[in-house]
Image 1 (tube, one colour):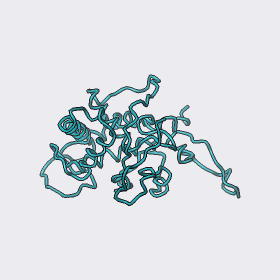
Image 2: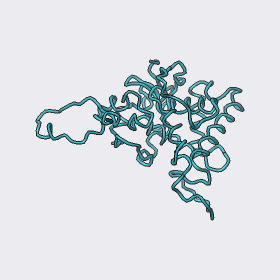
Image 3: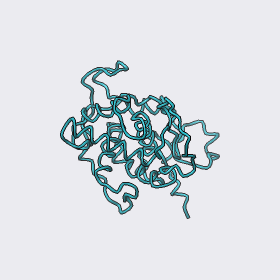
Image 4: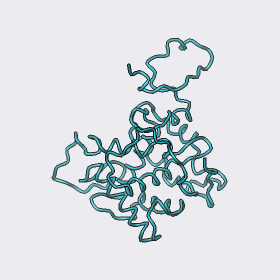
Length: 258
């Protein structure tokens, strides 16, 4: 585990510098997330806006290879490395538990982009096109996979230009500056706004942390364990009349497989 992250200055919400950018339990409580499947990013809105942590991403974090992790969408390792560094800044390791990299979020995103979600297989993507100034939802001629690749590569180009190092090699505060610039639309990229790219990146990061492990993220159900979520149970008939709080260990959809 890395050391506790702290901020050097007050953030835009006026938080105390000795407090974490966003306490995970407070985040869960405030959002009222619905767990058990792939979560819609619109639930989160701006809740993670400018809530990055100030210490470097956990580059030392190592996830044991159990033979199940393999990239099927990202052909270039450098793109996957930039993705891993970015999601760890959005969902960092802290005192409550592991961050996005340990939870397998990069592999969750890889799997999702390799399927119909990534290529917008069931969505109308033909013209005519009209410019719509709405950064809170998907607006682009690019499918999600192409948008993700273009955004990650643009992030890396910005990092190389400003810091002479790739995004995954620079310090956490510098990574945050680039992420914030994308979130605020201060950078231009081909085919889409950087705001739309950031919304997609943030949405998929949270989905990967809390979706059922069947989809490739939420490793060992740790995302659920941090929230004490019991998983997708079919019924609570045996506990419904209990006057005491009943705590269950989480179960995955995998546990229902014959």
